[in-house]
Image 1 (cartoon, one colour):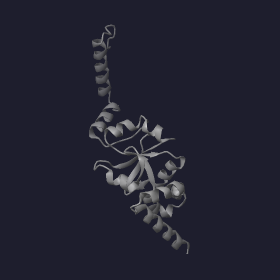
Image 2: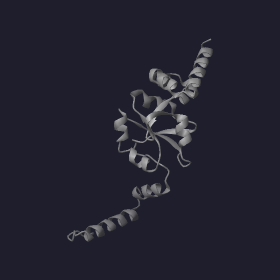
Image 3: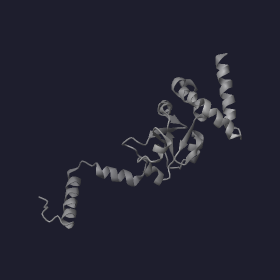
Image 4: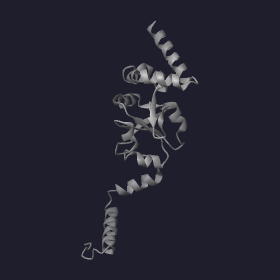
Length: 184
């Protein structure tokens, strides 16, 4: 009986979310969205049913809530993950320094502005084979080959690379008028 009621409830909510009258689902979301997010944490057995019902503001849709299905449909071919930023308000999300690089690359970012959002997303881990990635983490990789080469060069531990970098720095300092600086 319980399983049947749960299935029927999900079917009804799904029907509302797909209806042409978006105001109905928006009203539903305003009243019960927090409970759906809580379901992502507490009801792992229904993740696949809950996830398509979730809505978030994004860097490309700051006025209207966006579904994860829509987000994934709008992803570029090179994009390998669903990027998100957890913050305390829509205003602080829009001005976050982490966002700039992704916006320049035309990558949409989910704004998680409620305390429960980040926990819900972390419990989901993936959606349609795309991992959720927090853009505020240090090791953010966007998959650019140039970026990977640049990072590898920067973090290279070879003595030759360090020596070359020191020589280049010494030359640059001498050119800028730091005549007293000599490289030994």
